Length: 340
Ligand code: NAP
Ligand code: 3JM
Image 1: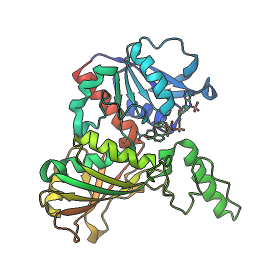
Image 2 (image 1 turned 180 degrees about the vertical axis):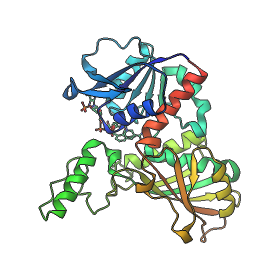
Image 3 (image 1 turned 90 degrees about the horizontal axis):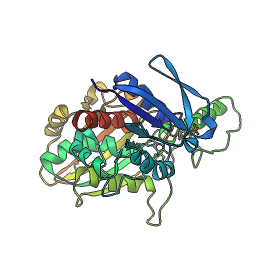
Image 4 (image 1 turned 120 degrees about the horizontal axis):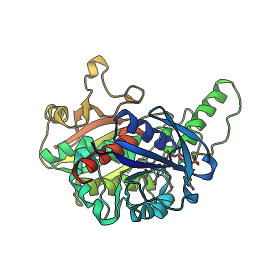
């Protein structure tokens, strides 16, 4: 089997480290692995398949030639600047940031939903990985959309701190420790307000329309991936004091009536979805139970009693895995199987 030279840009971060683990776990055919991060990480070594690989400083690199596939998770400004440079040197970039997602020439891909779009990698040499909250929602909703045509989605998210990077994970830990020790809590730095024992309705920056950028990402990305510009989507995104895993309370209105029983049957057959729905036995998806898994978990599936054709669902996934690293590696798997 052919093997590929792979780069991970942002290799020392929460997503980058997960990408390295997922490449190893899934036995991706890696011939050579190159790791890039900021000057702060010069000399840091990260294990991969029994070897210690030294991190290179991105801005010191002269050329990126010889790299076949580059997985980016070093922030949107690094992606804007460096993704075209990697692509020019011959790599296909799979970018985890928001930098390229809405570029009409760049495919925005969740393999279970629109793997056919990967063919458009040829336009710019870049494939975009959606936002973590978008990914898990479309994996669960696309199979229902195909059968009943969703007209409107109303979603509220319950997003873990790992979605805001390693510093936010450390911040929740430090605040909880201080709280339990009866000490004054350290001031928030990575997140906009205190996160310990609190929920913050503010993820990414506020925009002039009153929504946050995270909310607008969910709205725009969902339409692009589902290939339905008419789809109505509205979102409230909330950071909650959970380390790993995002949950979403989702309400949909459909064109065709679909019962909760039918929805459960459709979701049981859906790729990448696990239905956990037995409320009598306290079976429903929970963040601490799905962390470490690659599927999207759906429960609390019930008809919306306030409208004729509507459903409520509770959708949970590991944001660093299916929401970021696993989805990116799955895209790479389709790419090498079909095109490289
Ligand atoms: P993180 O834990 O803060 O890690 C950031 C990574 O970027 C680190 O490896 C860091 O290197 C690197 N970096 C920062 N500045 C750099 C520079 N000037 N040059 C090279 N590398 C630089 O954040 P994270 O949670 O892993 O997220 C990283 C990015 O992935 C986010 O900014 C976002 O765009 C994307 N992301 C996407 C999703 C998704 O939904 N698909 C989810 C989360 C994040 P050092 O350690 O050396 O500073
Ligand atoms: C998730 O550089 C940045 O501002 C990155 C901010 C960020 C993003 C993003 O916009 O790329 C942090 C966490 C995301 C994302 O997946 O959209």
